[in-house]
Length: 617
Image (tube, one colour):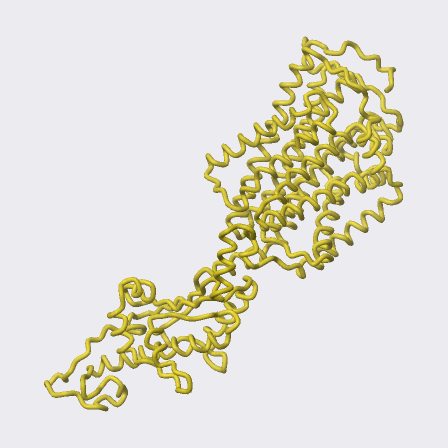
């Protein structure tokens, strides 16, 4: 940003906008800290984003002050800047606030926090970017008025005039193209894929990542998937029935004394009839646990490596090649549990014995593949008949849990309303502009380049088969905020020039010539602010920086190239200025002339002396 301002921003005190926005960012993060907004892998990207977006306001304010001094030789440039540009900056600030407010509806907490951080940050930075430049430049101009050269014929001004010099007849094809591009992006949105392997989100050259890769390669293990099993009654899972050597009359128990539970009535010991019934019921749970574990390791052999539970030590001992699978009786499992170390008992069964854990070690793979497996498990847990049935016994329930489920839940939450966040952002901005500009037409004009930028982003990602990172969920509202800033400022400045009596085409050309320098510089700083994220060692952030920077460039070009002919076409039909400018002020002047302005503060000193209204520049 320092390089861009020093090379391209041809004003006095070129780095002032950056100093102003740094103070604003300090305020923003201080307020965010006071409000308890946490830092996360997403919110840490807020600093360069706020720098890139926020510096635009200070650049626009700085450029307008010098425009009033150098070109219009206004007697009161600070008043003129505040009166003309201040309301416009408030409009674009609310554009950004509403665009970022859509992120508050995300299902992922860190994205909601990011949205709140940007809402607070942009509001604070805008306030700072209005007050400080006016105060600082007002003091400077009072002591030492700027005597720079006319910059309208400079390279940046000529470039913006050239970019927006499309013929008026191109307006209708542009509007049709914007709708088609947006619809095309909407059509391919569902076909875009996210990078769903969490390992690919982190720094691939770090030692930790290399160690994980070595571990995965040698053990074929990656993460864990738990099956959390609960029961209405503790005896349904692991009954604590005391084994007895003799019956109630002191006589030894005989095999088969209880036909319904022959396993637990033996020559060595016995249970009461009620206890035997309890053990038989728990036996059903043990058989289900063993059968599900064995079936899952076979059914999902490409995703699961091994399964462990309180049953595993005994079941593995009897799992011999060439022999039928033997399910240990629950009495033996209970005895094994009582003999296990405390750490094993804590890991596998809760203290009240109403819940137990089946833990699978998963093989390396992305979240999308695990999501298919987890969804299949959930469906099988609810199925009681057929070859895929895995419904637990009555009174027992099972649900996937663990790191794999958390990761899959993150993926599903990111995918579930990622697209909706972008469209909600567009709707909120459209609704605000419609109310503020008092016209649906003016609101739609501001959104034409936005639709192109949003649609083009999806089409490019689809055409090049790009895998989007989860952070692209915040990319859409960010592009909308930047693009509507440019379009709203251009539209409002166009109306200002029309109020000065210029024809539609002359108003568009004067807007481009006078503001071209500020727009190009602020566009470059916005791109730099986002693109610097592309230097991150985290692919999660790097891909976000690349894609969003590309989208911001598209948005800026769309605003500078396509908005002017559409504005001229609409204004020739009286749609743009209607209800905003008194008809008697509209004219057809074609030359950019100096316009004398009244002193809004009687008694305030003049800076440049009197202005001859007949002098044109």
